[in-house]
Image (cartoon, rainbow, N blue to C red; front, side, top):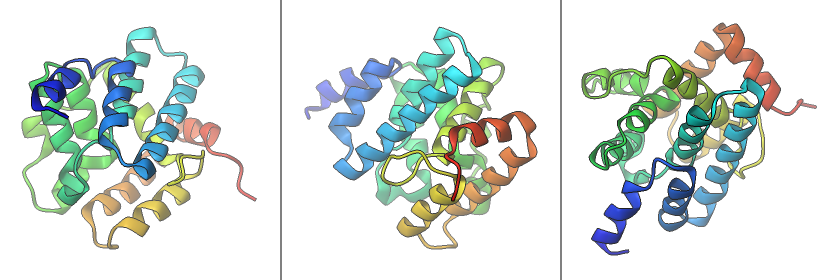
Length: 195
């Protein structure tokens, strides 16, 4: 893809359609399948919580973009996506993705600069979007099917070492969502019953 074409695609990435187009272009088939599953879980979360159309659009766009960063960048890949969104003029989406999946915790574990220095934490409706995105991420299996946080952690462990800050941040995120009654109910509603 040409640089100008890619820049144009990022300008449209704040819509679910534009974000989906970027995911189709930039993700390998396995990544795309999981990302599609996250977007589907995000749509289910939006319906369950009855969020308004602007928040729903933002949630779905972020779900499609959450994994667009280069995997070689490790736990910092989502920050690269957030920076690209900021350059494209999509600050709310950039802030959501910069804090998704416990990225602020991963930065602390890696002794990196705090994420909040670069990207303030989302507030109001965007904080709700962040929680819904995290719930969708934690209830999607590597194959894109609905799953449990245990499945999400196992999928991440298959791709990284146990000491990986991103994996450890996901473990902390599971604990944080479990301590929030509304988030816990949502995760339980999105996750299939285990047998």
